[in-house]
Length: 57
Image 1: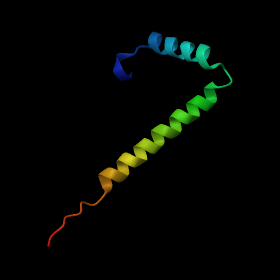
Image 2 (image 1 turned 180 degrees about the vertical axis):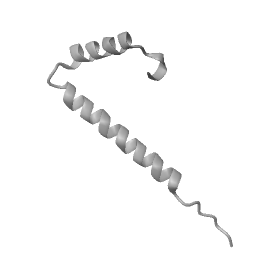
Image 3 (image 1 turned 90 degrees about the vertical axis):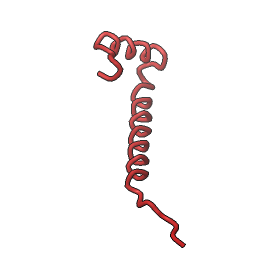
């Protein structure tokens, strides 16, 4: 688990999220987080795969 969060901690975080946002908003929230992570990964891949331009004059 990331940052040493155990199963109990993960369950606690999910329960707090359920109480804060309600059951109808959780799928939308999960979808938004997934989209954000996907876009971040694509951006970092593009940045790492960019050819390095050198100005030789």
